[in-house]
Length: 239
Image (cartoon, rainbow, N blue to C red; front, side, top):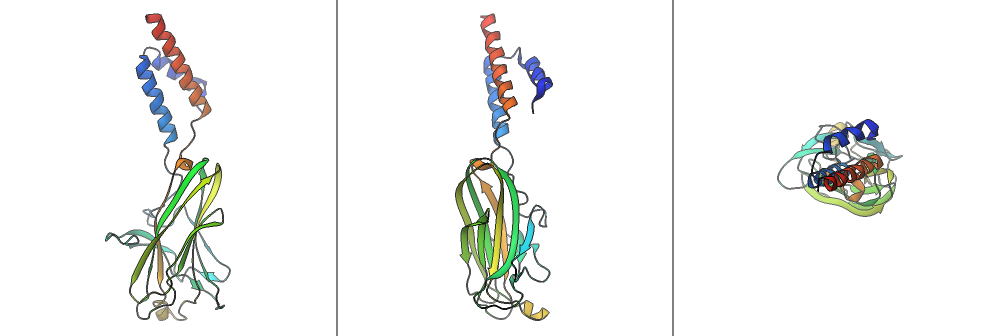
């Protein structure tokens, strides 16, 4: 909140400024308030860990023994590796035609407006054998699936790449962004056979749009209007 003290301080600073200068100041202050940093934390995993994200598993699912973690991987297939969240999802107990695994989610406070969510995804085949499922990726917003991609069968030591994206119009408030990764098969039953289960990757999670911009505080708006009024009065008296 701007507060009375802050308001009086601004008045004392700008009372001798020109109208044009005050107008520019007001425009810059409003722009500063509106273009705030993205409310999403650690979307590119450059902290080297999962800071900002919460992990979860499905009822019969696993994220993999020792997973998830953050490793250097070329998730967007542009020839440059960067920190990416890594998983090795699968089932705990086999049930036919059931996709299980888990993923990550984060709650973000957003304004009303348009929201675009995007993320790079990839799967990398195990060391020896081809696998019938590289993994299915789903992007959810408030538990509603917005986009999905299934890598299906994947060859050993081969990477496959794609992305998830969505565009929505949302209301203001706290919302959940969730990424679910599942497979219809078990992991290998022994440590060496785990190497033949594909690994899955997520990176470059980005949210953008009017919903990510903050709304100027009412007291700031009132302060700027008052500054403009004082400046106009001052200019008129000098004419």
